[in-house]
Length: 98
Image 1: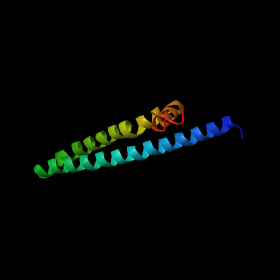
Image 2: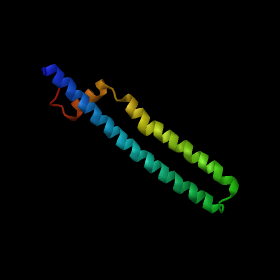
Image 3: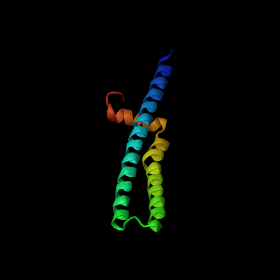
């Protein structure tokens, strides 16, 4: 295997690790947002004794907030993770690579 192929393979592995890192961080943010939103909406609905007319808007709000969190915390970082960004992030973390 040539040095060029070894470098390309290393960059691919680094990019996979960075994608995994972004995915795990995104999943953690989504879980935190879902939990926090659920608690807040439950407290709000509890203050009004869980009215029937309030449950559907609360569910819609929860789904909308979680959807926004999925887009912002998971989809966006994974979409932006290109080969060039993976190399730049690796070089920024380990300057001796250059």
